[in-house]
Image (cartoon, rainbow, N blue to C red; front, side):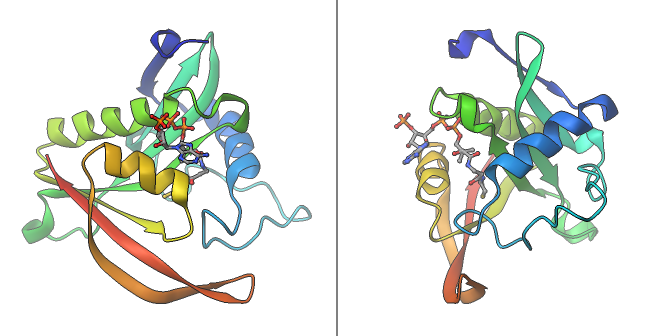
Length: 165
Ligand SMILES: CC(C)(COP(=O)(O)OP(=O)(O)OC[C@H]1O[C@@H](n2cnc3c(N)ncnc32)[C@H](O)[C@@H]1OP(=O)(O)O)[C@@H](O)C(=O)NCCC(=O)NCCS
């Protein structure tokens, strides 16, 4: 697979299973503060908090291999020029081939298209791969929530990153 074969498009409800599979395969305490997935619980709806209109997926030969979620940090008019990346993941089978970069660039374009002037996100200090990707795409650190999460018994900082659009 080359990055030229990757198509980024808006998500559809029918992508739910693929998105859940990607989340299940990628989410760990190294990259996310989320509670571990309970295998006994009902499957999580990946669109529960953000509908398909706020999700972009990366597809290669008809297979969804990654997604990025856009949202607004608050519903306030005074904050309407700010968009946030609320989630980003690439299937382990397809990591390291530029898909994450394509998704972040697509989120930048989409946030601009929606009138955004600033794009923010939060990333765990322990998530070296994501931090390197975001730095390469022009995000800078604007803040740190020191010891914001306790993961595997250790306090981990959460970093606030941002870039202009
Ligand atoms: C972070 C993530 C989305 C990157 O996706 P990807 O498709 O592998 O990223 P890319 O191939 O576009 O890599 C872009 C850059 O990220 C960095 N990077 C990616 N994987 C890395 C790794 N394992 N270690 C260090 N840096 C890494 C590198 O700087 C890379 O640039 P390079 O190829 O020029 O060295 C992917 O690793 C992932 O899904 N991780 C789990 C979920 C997650 O952490 N989400 C972010 C939450 S804030």
